Length: 432
Image (cartoon, rainbow, N blue to C red; front, side, top):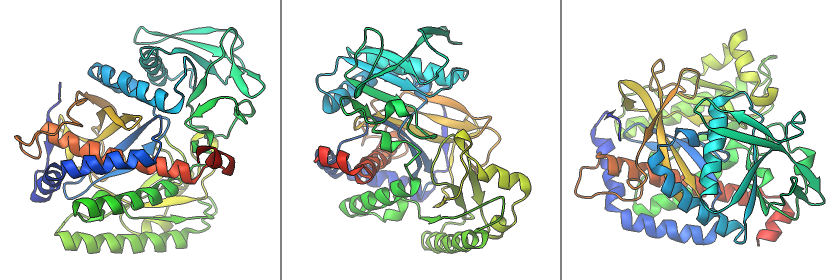
């Protein structure tokens, strides 16, 4: 069930994972205490990068779209975690409305929605899928490439609620990241739970806010287990007011890139790392791997050609990029079947429920793997992520996956803090 996994097994890698194993009791105790104070997101996925001396998340998605890539062995844990999430947020829920993206032609995404529906139905929920597409005015059945079917239905607004014909849901679950903004029909739903909350969409969410929350979370965590926070974290900075077409703000961006590269080189010298450092410059909002470039020299920022400027200037929904986050790059030392890979970990409530490797045969270990040509290798580690085995080596699959699960849950906790701190005043008062 577990594909062949090859990693550069240099000393720091084994030492890092061994440190997690030796401190597993303290880690789990600390995690339990955190979830008493913070409400976990309903679901999330995070991309991890493992360079051996460092294991850190490089992105977190609050509207995950890859449930179809999970191994079927994950299903029981997904159902259990989904039940916990529903009970925590809306204990009396019996009917749930799921609102997906408007990707009616993206078969892979639609298979994700269908898989999510099947998981939620097995929790005992009556779930239906509502669409924001105005052209769908009656129930429409979509035949999917994997043989399953998905029915999309129009939604209606009734006061402070969203309803369908003969269907009045207790809560609304978004699998739509609201990149283009909150549609009018979703505004002011004061009679229903909206999960995740609408302010967590990419119209207002910023990666830099998540990075700041993760920085604080890992600072405390690192003190608990006695480790250098840098080994779990990536340095970051921001640059605003950019116009890639007009080359406005290029020099400021280049100066910040140069400063971060200097800082990374200093840490590499401290740890005896011989790799060439790089940073990732990406839009401070948005997903789908758009608006991203890897930079090894600040001169690359001021030397962008027309094609590169066009790539950096626009993200999903055609939104222009004016604010970017500059993030320390993390090499991935992991390969699957000879190709460069990175783990993607899925969570529901505060549980790790599965994951897969994102694999790219044409990309290097210092490049973005979330790009056309990628494929996925599902992993059956639904128990391994929470059950390390001290009788095996630090790099054995149960222990490697436990390390993934620890860092993924740190990112999830940071997302919880981020959502709390960016909530509109009225929501914050309600939560209090």
